[in-house]
Length: 366
Image 1: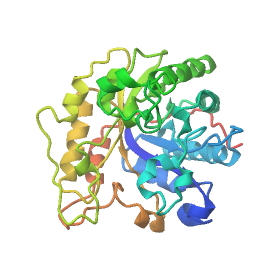
Image 2: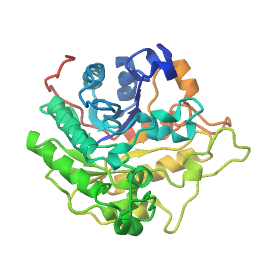
Image 3: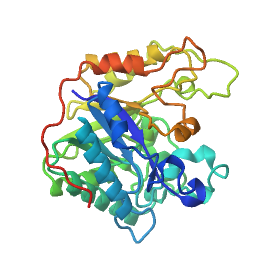
Image 4: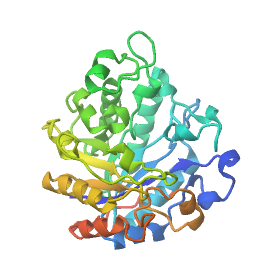
């Protein structure tokens, strides 16, 4: 059983980020050994690294040397801290980090940095598969690496096409299955990637998320597990007006769900016996009310079903960066004095962790 937290990074663009904001490394924010030590000391035994641009976004597609070196350092530091790692590929050929920040286009970054051509270009899809094979070869043989997520939050609904060549935008699973074009079909793409990776490594667990940003109900559109040692990876941010409640809002959204609008119902309505399900991300804005109840409900649902889980987002010790990106920081309390931090609930749950990585050979930083 793995219980931990997610870290999310993007590759530095000096014209957007400058040279030093977020730690001065090739990706930001920079996670140092002390950050992983704090996570392990809090009780977690897993870190999900939502890692950017192991390969370049634009052709000629190839491994980004500085990013690969940073990844090796982070994996080594996480293992030394006593954490298992899941490597989750966030961006790469035909897909930039900025697809996760569309609301900020032409504000803090230019819209031209949003690249999601992967949903319309088979060449980019093939390059993404080669990136996944490369990543698998980098980590195979490391017992501290619990799995490889072949794409974080696939979103063909945004950048993909329907069967008439128009923008897809099918946010209901049945509509998606009926309308998605072959070139944008994540089920096909994921299967091809998984089979290529499996030919390079026989036992590395492969995490595959459904489309629509890994929404749980979209597991219904995925076919059978394409290879052995598949793990279905879902992300749950519902109810969204609660989980993404903005700091600037004059009102206060209180956590509440029931009936069919629960995580448990979403899970149990999608029966998957071909592979385990992992809650790879969940979290709530610290500006909402009842955050402790939200985390307890999600964790209880996972524990009752024997599901591993990881909460979003473990912070760095970089005060300037954390002031700029505080919404999902699980160590900070809410806007009111009586709204405690999520870490209290997470720490209680992490006390159940008993397993830590053993003496796996480190890959090194070359």
